[in-house]
Image (cartoon, rainbow, N blue to C red; front, side):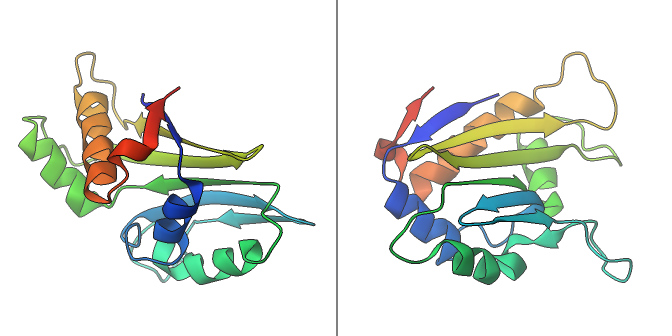
Length: 156
């Protein structure tokens, strides 16, 4: 698991809420605390093909909750890397792409004027020597670098 602080909260927030940088990710859950608390359950409805909704669908509503002169007290998002990109990442790293793909999480937490990112992997089946977590951590660092945030992050 990777844990990072984002030094430039404004730049990261712009990418998260206004740019398409994270639009392919799926939303597992979210919570925004402003003058009231709003919870998001990212579970898709029965007629949707995917089990979770895309961040792109929720992003405008989430942005409405946080925009303005007063920043939110806190927020939390649990985003899931898309399955097609997960398959490609596993293949790239020589990991077997089983039927039950692992869920690759990017958790984003803003609290006390600090923005923290953590990674996580949820495997459907136990694999004692899985390298999935290390692959995912490297991919997140690459993603942040590609977004121009390489110098704006530090370890926990």
